[in-house]
Amino acid sequence: MTNPSKGAPPRPARRNLAYGRWTPAFFLAPAIVALLAVGLYPTIFAVVTSFRRYNITRTRDGFPFIGFDNYVAVLTDPSFWGALGVTARFFFAVVPAQIVLGLLIALLLHRPGLDFMRALTRISLVIPLATTYAVVGLIGRLVFNREFGVANQFLSWFGIGPVSWLADPLGAFAAIALMDIWQWTPFVTLILLAGLSMVPPEIEEAARLETRSKLALLRHVQLPYLLPGLTAILILRSADILKLFDVPFIMTRGGPGASTELVSIYIQRIGFRVFDIGLASAQAILLLIMTILLSRLYIRLVYREIE
Amino acid sequence: MTSRTTGRIAHFLGLVLVTACALFPVYWMFSSSFKNQVDLLAAPPVWTFTPTLQNYVDVFADPKTLNGTINSFIVASATTVLALLFGTPAAYALARFEFRGKADLWFWFITNRMISPIVLALPVYLLAQQARLLDTHIVLVLIYLTFNLPIVVWICTDQFRSIPPELEQAARLEGASQFRIFWQLYLPLGAPGVAVSAIFSFIFSWNELLYALVLTRRAAQTAPVAATSYMSGYEVPWGKIMATGSVIVLPVIVFSIIVSRHMVRGLTMGATK
Image (cartoon, rainbow over all chains, first blue to last red; front, side, top):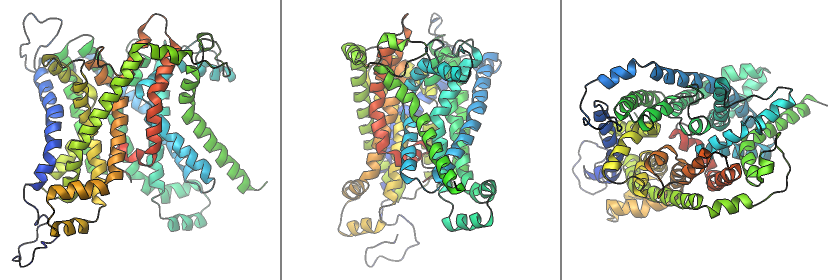
């Protein structure tokens, strides 16, 4: 962009020559001030709280600073590691299934022909993504009910006896995982589909003439175009599972036992049911650090255009 | 039968299966919302039954669901308006200016998109308690900005970038101020993107549960919290729950179909086009 005013002396080229130096600041200020107020200020407050003994049920001695005691308590607490373990298990239970199913569905949607049916399927895939998470949890409660749930009816058609889904540690985990696979496979599908449609048609045509093997086509021609999407999927799904709360909270509240207590549910319990806010804040800050690392990774690997 | 025909049939059946799986849980909720208590508790579940509107009558006679829906609407609309008010100027700056710290700003916006609500729910609960803002609309409106603002900024930046810079230069030659250029050139020309981002902001706020659960009690309780609270009684009123769920989900389904082409962009902050 060059300076349009006539007769201006030539100056070293700078992109914003015609703008005032502070112009961007005026436009950015409202958004930044808002995020500072509602995002950063509470975060700093949480950091401060995490260094205090802050239990609402025991206010007699005030809320003294206790250094890193909360962090030591968290890091030596087997139930915190247990919650992280459940979260990791959940990731490995749902994400590979979502990628495999998502890829199969994306290939179905990418295949030429049946235009109307493909459009219909694409639209219907958006519905799980938009469905209110809390309502997904409520549907899960109904579908996986032991007596009158439709999941057990499906199983009975294959001669499998009634499963007490939500009352059983493994069953509850599986039920929540199935709801998550239902809700988020479309997300994976649509990202992979976008990748498939990036393959230049002439290259795909030429490759189809070379080989009849769909697997070879996928591996040598389409896979390179899918990789950026796969990276985005892995990082975003990690972040989303770290913050997964609504569906497991409604379906099981983390139970039975601690079998479905994912990390966000666990922190919510310590903060709002045990009322040890200092300890919960330390846990939340550790969770925040994990999120920041994921976010850095996302920028580095997926968002190349910005940096 | 040739292998091409078999392939076509398999393709068709595959698509039908995927569509059926995608729609089934929501279909099951809608259909259950029209069942009476006997049909709801039938084991094994019944697929055909005489539909009744009684659950909807009950739900709207109950102030909890009605107030919850109104509160959800107030909060989601107000936070969307604020996000647009604050977010669109920022998007303009990010689309058209180069400045130091731009990459850091992006990083911050994206982190806000990924952050678990529980991280902010704890301190915001304490702060709102001190400020006597618990159980008010305003606290939800403000906290929802943490995820709405990044979405609005991202989608609008993308949209504003696609507006030819020559238009802006022409406007500047005519003597238009920077603010007028934004207000009378970028906003109208970028209206499609602004509308899409507004819909996303509304959907995400409408769907939110954790903040609303922690920060509201009764007066400002939103619809998802109201629906959830029906689960806590001794006898679970499945009909009312499914009717409330249907009322909550219907508007977001309509909105999401409108923005379906942009869904992935909205959820990934634009990793794919």
